[in-house]
Amino acid sequence: FAADRSIATMMPRTACTVAVLLAAIVALAAVVPSSAFAPSTQVLGASALRQAAPLALRTRGRIASRSLQQSLLCTATKEPSSSSGIGWDSHKAIDKAPDSLCRDGTANTEMRAKFEKMCREAQDQICKAIEECDGQGKFQEDAWTREDGGGGISRVLQGGKVWEKAGCNLSVVYGSMPQEALSAANDRRKFSTTDRGAGYKPGERVPFFACGLSSVMHPRNPHCPTMHFNYRYFETEGGVWWFGGGTDITPAYLDEDDMRHFHGTYKEVCDKHDKDFYPRFKAWADEYFMIKHRGETRGLGGIFFDDLEDRDPEKIFAFSSDCAAAVTKAYLPIIEKHKDDEFTERQKEWQLMRRGRYVEFNLVYDRGTIFGLKTGGRIESILMSLPETARWEYNHHAEEGSEEERIMKVFKEAKEWV
Image 1 (tube, helix red, strand yellow):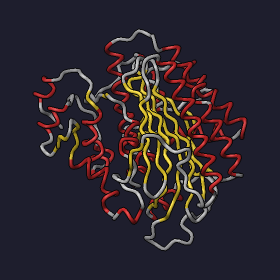
Image 2 (cartoon, helix red, strand yellow):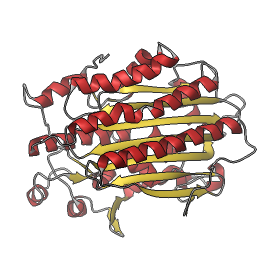
Image 3 (cartoon, one colour):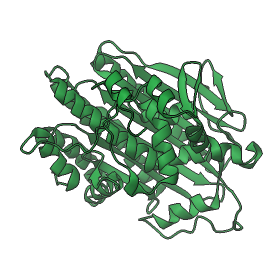
């Protein structure tokens, strides 16, 4: 995509669609060292992709590339679907989701059903609150199942008054994961020393269950931050279980009162369950959301935890439930405060550049995205997290003394808010 001057002349200073950039970013993530990532001044559209990338394919109005298809689908097509029970094409659309997507008679059915119920209730509550705040946009719901069990409910709002794009997805998954995925999970764990691979032979796939609720909200106004949360429960058929999750915020401009409110809300939730949770999970979020090839964070954090299994599962379930219930309390007052703020074209361009960083993180580092792709997840649901528009400029630096430079300093060096 490098340097076709005619492309830049044809579409100056406009936002590039993320769908077009997926081919470049995912392919680079797979084959290029992180040091090779660099921004670009070229603004790309569908016609630009056809000129710059001859391998691009256009089908039914969507742009894709062979590199992108291979990156996203290789793990689903490399092995027969019977080996994992799921694949990119194993999802069946249904008019309405059943009362439960969990299978009966499996290990720890009670916790699986309880976590799904919590996620569904949180999805309903959060989507209702978002629609009320937006005043115009409505969530479109897609329900789907898999033959071997599980399925999901995807809800996406597009073209709203406040939110350009907002998604809130429930997934219940039965499948199997490679041994190397399990080993990687053990390597990164911060709690306990349970060997998740015990009892499995080298190379043997590990049957698993996963249930989670994931959401990303991308507002129109540059003064309104993007918000993401995910809460999940995992089990292997061998009986090993763990919880993960977190809520984080990604502003384009810094309002310290907003950050104190957001972080303070989650500190209250954490302190209710364990005084060590907030400092530990806040630091973990700062670490996790680092864009390593940029040396800066995606946003201004929040809380993040994974592989949590160090206490009674009922206690961790209660903590996860309270975290999900706090999403609207932590986020919506900030949106109400700023949704009608005036902004300039320059500020909008900066927001789109920060969204570019969001895309880079999600496609290169995000565990949920990588897990979904490696286990044959539903592509539309997995990539729901990406904004409709983003921007890359070559060698861009925030102007000295500007509001953009002010927040960049915090992206590069984490700050304590409460």
